[in-house]
Image (tube, rainbow, N blue to C red; front, side):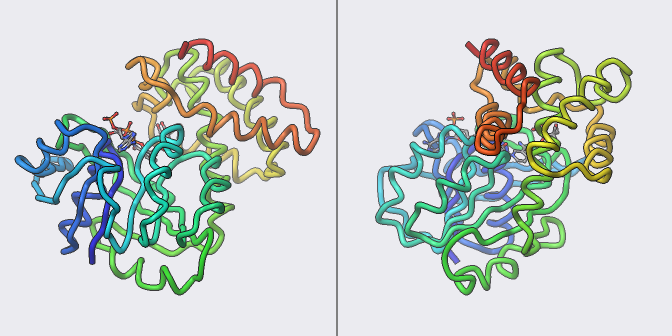
Length: 291
Ligand SMILES: NC(=O)C1=CN([C@@H]2O[C@H](COP(=O)(O)OP(=O)(O)OC[C@H]3O[C@@H](n4cnc5c(N)ncnc54)[C@H](OP(=O)(O)O)[C@@H]3O)[C@@H](O)[C@H]2O)C=CC1
Ligand SMILES: CC(C)(CO)C(=O)C(=O)O
């Protein structure tokens, strides 16, 4: 099977490495010709614990040719999706979007191709143009957003590996929302206070601030059940030593995914008329910091 991965960041390199190892013909589509040349020459090295392996997919720059892949996995940040989609119009591939947040779902529904979300429960860190560290092994949940279900019938079986599992998810909206609320609670506060995820639990004042953010976000999403708060605390604990992606983006001077995470919720609060002053404060603060 021909599988294209758009984006050679942490998630793109991780998926390219594992799917190539599963025996598929992978092409990584990068933004720069330098990264494509690097991967062509050196492959992709994945570090997991003490182990380190290299796989050798093809690599080319995105947008130079119409992709001929059976599947295309889009692994760019939310805000880069519009630029990627521009080159998709003639592609016949089935599409899988791997982003956090929720604002891509509406964009996906406007595409001609069958499209699915891949909800990524792995942690990954890019350590070089062809090197990724698999920091938190988890799984990927596939949910069909548009097109015939039959288009994705083979996906789970094709990509699944014991060391890199894929499962089909019927309630993909519920799972995506569950992940969204975790990111809403953890990412902006860690970015503003410049703390690791665990500090939001360990410091009682920050925990109380996070609880207030949770209550407002849960109200907007109609997800006030106890289990969602427990999940937020569980993720905070499990990733206690992590620098959240939003804090990492700010520290590196990159754009954050605040629009796809908090911005999406503000859109929902406007539609429903539910007030969200804390979310608005977080949104404006992170926007202000990213300049
Ligand atoms: N990292 C993680 O552990 C997890 C990430 N996610 C989600 O996955 C998504 C990707 O995250 P992540 O991999 O960490 O982000 P990165 O910033 O590491 O990677 C994004 C990549 O997209 C590339 N890119 C941007 N525009 C284009 C383009 N037009 N054509 C081709 N490539 C392009 C960038 O290229 P360049 O480097 O040249 O700018 C970069 O390599 C995000 O939505 C994130 O929230 C979800 C779960 C876990
Ligand atoms: C779960 C969490 C908060 C882990 O750091 C994350 O997804 C992120 O940083 O974006």
